[in-house]
Image (cartoon, rainbow, N blue to C red; front, side, top):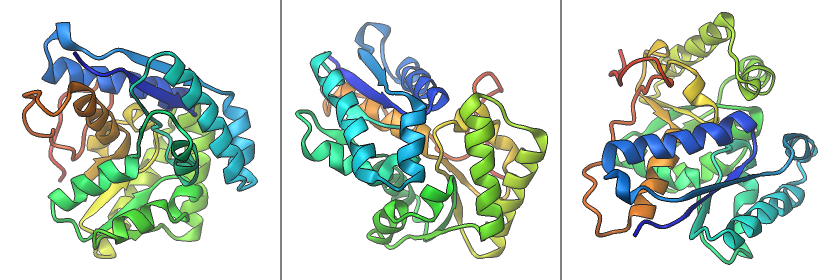
Length: 255
C-alpha cells in the first residue's frame, strides 16, 4: 500500500501544480490501483510573502509547521513543500514534526550528482538565488551553484511573484529567462535549475542552451517514489532535462 503524501502549499499555483505533477508520475509509473493518497494544505500566500520579505524565517517555519501538523493529522506519512523561496525554514518545520519532510534541494542534488554536473545556474527568486539553501546543499556534493547578476535577479523576482505566482507569464519574460540561461552557459555552467514551484506553467523546451532541471518536478517524482516504497518496481528516474509544461507536448532534449 502506498504511503500518504502531504503537500504544504505556499504559492497557490505551485501547490496545485505539485499535486498534478505527483499524479502525472503516478500515471506513468504505477498501476491506478496503487496511486498514493495526497492531501494538500495551504496558509494564505500573503502571510508567507510578508515573512519572506522580512526575512523572518522563524515565522515561515511556524507557518510550514502549522501545515505539517494539519497534514499529519490528516494521515500523511511525510510532507513536501514545492516552494523554493521558503527552503530556509523547512528544517525548522521538520525539526519538530511528527512526520518526516522531503526537501527539494536533496532531490535536486541527487539528480545533478547522478548526471555528474559540476556547475549549475539558478533560476528563481532572489531569496533562492541569493540564499544559502542551494549553495550549501550543492556545495556539499562538489557542485557550484551560480546566481544571476543583480539586474537579472531583480527581473526574475518580478516575473515569479507578479506573473508566475498568479498563473501567467509574458513573452518578454520568457525571453529574459532564456537570456539568463544562455549567460550561464557562457559562464561555464553545465546545467540550470528551475528553482521555482510554478515551472510547469512554462514550456521549458523554449529555454534551451543548457540541460534544464525542473526542481518542482524532480521533487514530485521523489515524493511518488517515497510513497511507493523501496520494494516497488518503478523503473529509473525520468529524464529530468527540459520537461515541457502541462498540455504542451512530450519531453525533449536540450539544444
